[in-house]
Image 1 (cartoon, rainbow, N blue to C red):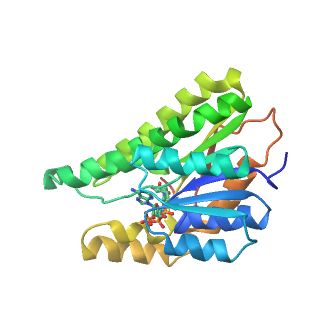
Image 2 (image 1 turned 30 degrees about the vertical axis):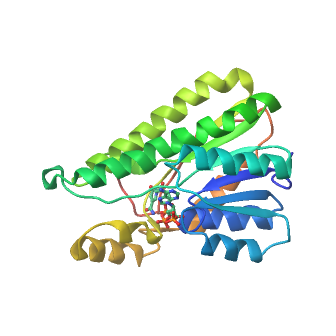
Length: 246
Ligand code: NDP
């Protein structure tokens, strides 16, 4: 099966990497369930493609019941769940000494529990089908830590660990696991960093295409990882802008 007619669930589909992937997959004929907290952009994407091709759900990935319900509706409508792209994430960077406990908790809840909730919600369908593919967005910050990145990096290291555990546990069930580890990408993510100075520094980075990827660059690799023969599983996609060293 190629990407056409595959049923793909994408979290964090209202912006950046998730939106770019949704649009690319929709162009290629996939059937989609798009998830984010704010539904306006999801509805816009839906209206740009054929009637009935795209479902949307305003769900917070930390709300397991909401996620499970939306995925059940997609399975009822489309008849199967082939792929989950666990992509929603936040990045409220700060030094540990700032003691931003609420931000830490939110980052852990969205970036780690959100991914686990997605896995838990789709695995029963994939087991029943005897096939499936789960992808998750980690980061180059899931390989290397920088000052102010401790908590965010911790969640992205965790995503890699979870996805590698999933890969090993589900290999015999023919459920693929792919972790995407992008370097810097120009999206709205940097706008979630507290503090004008940090945002300005990030914004200057994002102005330079050699130092910051476009969301479409990442989306293309996500689609390639999905569009593999049944016996081929791409475990990790590591993608950086050309001048990024770390
Ligand atoms: P954006 O901020 O552009 O998009 C983030 C998406 O996640 C939005 O659709 C947002 O929608 C959604 N989201 C955030 N919190 C929740 C939640 N609680 N429940 C459901 N959806 C949520 O950022 P990116 O596209 O850059 O980020 C996508 C992923 O890529 C993240 O996991 C990020 O950590 C990772 N990444 C990004 C890099 C970059 O440089 N941009 C580099 C490496 C990894 P809404 O607000 O409507 O809920």
